[in-house]
Image 1 (cartoon, one colour):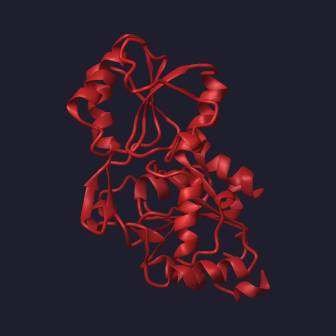
Image 2 (cartoon, one colour):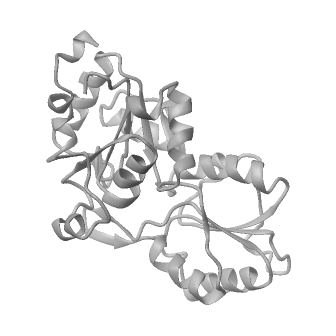
Length: 267
């Protein structure tokens, strides 16, 4: 742990649940910040913009700014600019994230005549009804590329586990006989983008998450050290059935300073 020079942190289920801080997480992040360790909050959250997320976290006491946050929508915008410049896109998402999709031409939902070049699937919510999903299916059948911000099957809220877009994405892929291009976690490009922003190498970084597959094992495949927390969406049975084993498992993000060892002030 003495070689750690950067920390990547998932937000939902790690620092907060339903945007309320988990016990000890504010203090732990303050301690890590005080040690001078560069931090990136990396999230597949698609219901809010980076600025909105930062504002909520600051109100809760977390020492962060919008510049510290890397979202799946922001990475998706960069991906589309590189791979599909000028593409007309249909967006299926719960929440207004257009601010983080700068440079992306998103068709108006009322425009049902234009066939988009790309169907972007974000986070699930009430918008994921039959009509919307069937429309996306039709677009893909007619040649539109299918780009997904993530493959998360569910997330935890104060009301318990809730279905996420991955549960619907599997059906779209099977029905249309295509495989979505994934831009957020667990794609290696997502972690690379975060590390580039911090100026750190994968072998110098930790990734802390509550999703063993998308957060932790995906980060380990990208060369980072993975830390799984037993909060948020963590389930013992999911841990046991996972495709690999995390480098470290801790009860909560509040335990991260202790895992890092040697007084953080010395770093």
